[in-house]
Image (cartoon, helix red, strand yellow):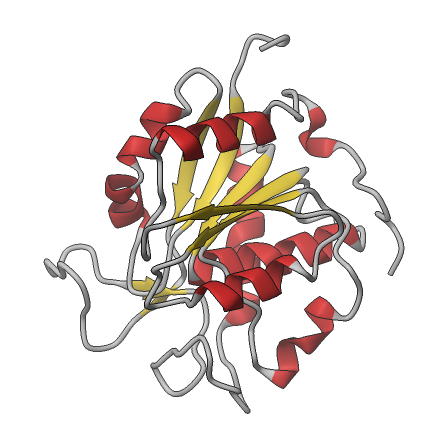
Length: 227
C-alpha cells in the first residue's frame, strides 16, 4: 500500500458470538486479506442469557441488541428493542482505541449494526470515522424504533455478501439491506451462514478494498454533514 500499512477493519461479530469466536471463524478471510487489510475485533457489550454455541464458560456469547427480554430474532418487529445505544458507544470506543480504522466488517447482527453505524456516519456523526463497510449476511432491523436509520439512502460505500443457502438470514433480507445504500456492491455466494473466503470471494473483497487507501478513514463520505 502507498503509505506502508494495510487497511484496518473493525470486526463486529454475530449474535451469540464474541470477539474470540469471530476471530476463529474468520481465519480463512484474514489469510486471504493478509498484507492488504487487517482485522481488529470487539465483543458486544451484552451477554446472551442461556449460553450458546461452543459455550465454555470463560467466553460467554454476546449480542448487540435484543428484540425481546434476553432474546433476538432478526425478523421480529420488536416493540421495545433494548441495548443498541450501549453497542453504538462500544463501537465508537473501539474505533477510538484501535484507530485509525478505515472500515467495518460486520457479520449477521454485527452487519446490521455496522449498517446503522454507516447511516450515522453518512449524517456526519463524528464518533464513527469510517470510510466503508463489508456487510456479510446483514439485514435491516424490523424494530420501528430503528426505522430512522433507513430514512434516507445511506451514502457510504458498502460490499454486501449474500449467501444463497443462508438459513439464518435469508438472502432476500440481505438484498433488502443493500437497497438502503447508495450504489452498493452485492456479492452472492452459494453457501450458508458464514463469512466466505474462497477464490471468487477473495477477488471481490480485494477489488472492493482497492478503492480505498490508508489514511482515507477520516475522509468525508458523500453526503456527510447532511442531517
